[in-house]
Amino acid sequence: PVVLTDVYRALPLLKRNVALNKLQNCCDVCPLPWGTPLKLLGEPIRNRTPFNLVVASDCSYDFVAPDRPSPSLDALLTSIQLGERALVCVSRRPNEVEAFTAALERAQLTPTVVHQGTLDASVEGVGECLVFSFDFTKPAPDDPACPTGGDARHETPVVEATAEVAAAEVVSTAAA
Image (cartoon, rainbow, N blue to C red; front, side, top):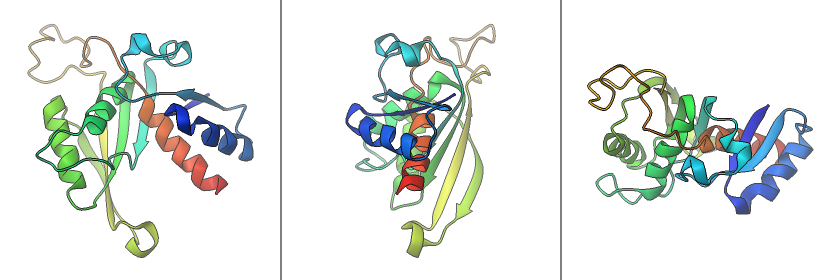
């Protein structure tokens, strides 16, 4: 089944939306505070890692400026590494893509932009989005910690918060 995650306070709404969309048989709802070390997460998350794919959409919303670290973006980038692969959609609002790119540099991650979409800003509130693709199954290039071509993740994968969040947003939208 698909695992949908969010912070604890949002779980009742997420569960309600799963029920309204009759997805109980194919979706599990679990708490996932971004950046939480794997060993501190509940068994429903720990026992499923690594996830095949983590999907995050419109999750870069509380940065201050590209030149200042964003704890939420840093935690998001840590959490997506619970998956073997990840797709992260970032909207082009003022400085948002730049803040995300700066967070990527801090985390020493080098994803590929696999989609650049144009949206109707009058409907969506944003005119463009970028989808970044991450592959954590390959060794990081020039990673001295992986001289034998080991896993590109840091020692312990973190959290699949993002795949769940994006799916939660889709479910929430469908139920609205």
